[in-house]
Amino acid sequence: MTATYVETDFLFAVAKPDDWLSEEVEAVLGERTVETSLLAYAEFLVAAYTEGEGFDFEVAPLVADMLEMVPLPSAKDEEVLLAAATYLDDHDLTPFDALHAAHAAIRHEGVLVGSDLSYDALPDIERHQLESE
Image (cartoon, rainbow, N blue to C red; front, side, top):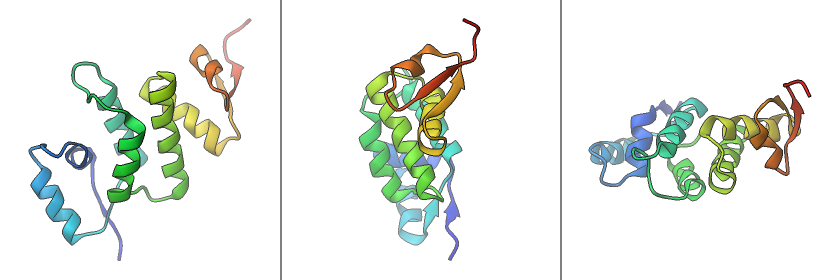
């Protein structure tokens, strides 16, 4: 059976037990196998990161728990997401920088071309400068 695709509002309700859609999400989880995309989790990470609108929690443990209920289509994508969540918690990167770094680390042997100096602090990333020296 093919999993049913769920979007970001579903993830918010999974993350926040008091969400206005929590009961509906519980019902869906009881009836169907679901999955989502790295894009939906990226949107979730942006919301979690947004000061004042985000959540007050460590991202990595929550995302790990969420993946048990709402998986991604591939184990590699889950590995990228977990690495990105760790970069958010441990290295204070923005969500998209964390996702780029994680993607480079997991899928491209840690090599990344870019101008953002924050990548230089990551032990598993070898940044090749985009900017001129």
